[in-house]
Amino acid sequence: MEGCGIVLDMPLHHCFDEIMEGKLVPVLNGWRIPNLDNYIGATLAASKLRRVQMFIDFYVRRRREIEGEQKRRLQEKYSFIV
Image (cartoon, rainbow, N blue to C red; front, side):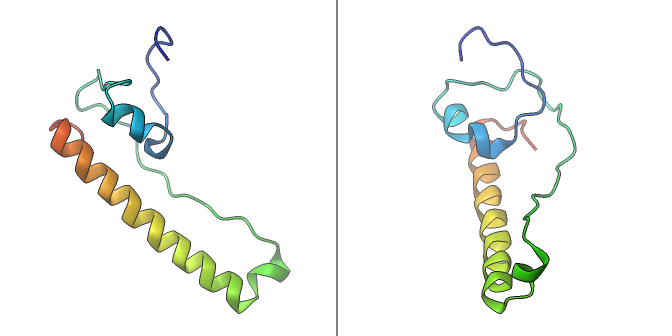
């Protein structure tokens, strides 16, 4: 990663470990792009299945929990991350 420059739009879940390990560091204090929701793709037929809908509901809840925890941990390490 060294020498790759500044990335402005890398999703946190792609680089969380590297930030926590100090391999990537925030350099634009306070600058951020708006959060975008994750999307789940499924065929129309699959999306009508109860087990698929239950998984989608579980996955969305779990991703939000994970992302909230990652953000909390980063804010402890880098107080300017919002």
